[in-house]
Every structure is written in C-alpha cells, then in structure tokens.
Image 1 (cartoon, helix red, strand yellow):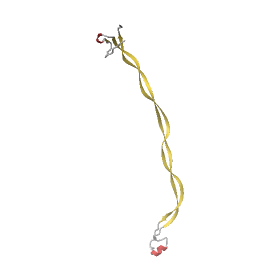
Image 2 (image 1 turned 180 degrees about the vertical axis):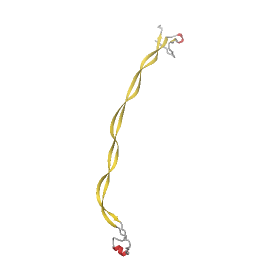
Image 3 (image 1 turned 45 degrees about the vertical axis):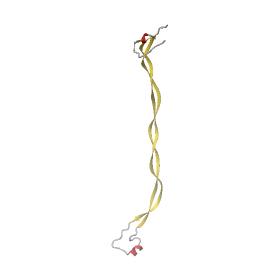
Image 4 (image 1 turned 30 degrees about the horizontal axis):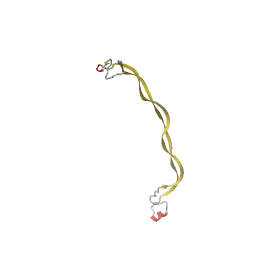
Length: 146
C-alpha cells in the first residue's frame, strides 16, 4: 500500500501524474488531552517570634552619702577682716555641706519577645489535564494491485 500525501485540502482526490494510488482527505475530529502545571496552596496560621523589645528596669540599688551645698548668705552690716573670716567657717567665702543619703540604682536591660500571627503557605505542584477536540485530516488511499 503506497500513499502520496501533498498539500491536501478536504475532499480532493489525488492522482499524481495520473499514476499511483488515488487518495482522498476528509476532516475528522478526535479527542486529545491538553495538560498544564498548576499549584495547590495550603496555608496555616502560626504565632511566631518576629523580634524583641528591650526595656530598662530598675536593677541593684545602693545608698550613698552626697554633699548638699548650703548657700551662705552674709549678714548685712557685719563685715569681718579676712583673718577673722578664715577663723569663722560659717562666714565669708566658705560653703557648708549638708550630708544627705541618696539612692543610686543600675538600669538593667530586659528583653521581651515580640510575637505576631503569620501565615505559612505551601504550594504543591500538580498536573491538570482536560479533554479537547482536535481536527485532523483522515487520508484514505486506493491502490490497484498488479
């Protein structure tokens, strides 16, 4: 069985140069598949640590003695000589000191985790196929047996 196929159009009979088989082409519809890659996505909400907040808190404390200055105000009308002023500690340029107790504390950094709700999504690939009709040429040839 020998068949010659050229640029055929539907319904024509082929007989090249008057010799050989006679062929005829007619349209036919067949079913085929068209496939593509798609994704299934699944998401889950979770609480996760996304950072940290640092704050300062009062740490170890201790009491210390400090000098609180007492300002001297001279009495009006009474001025002493320099030698007398040195002899009298409450008079002249001398500043008295009052002892006071003061609390001194260290600041301690404290770290606190910061949590947020996050979506965690997973995409899984899958093949998706659908049936489609395709038009093709059905070629029928007649041959003469010798």
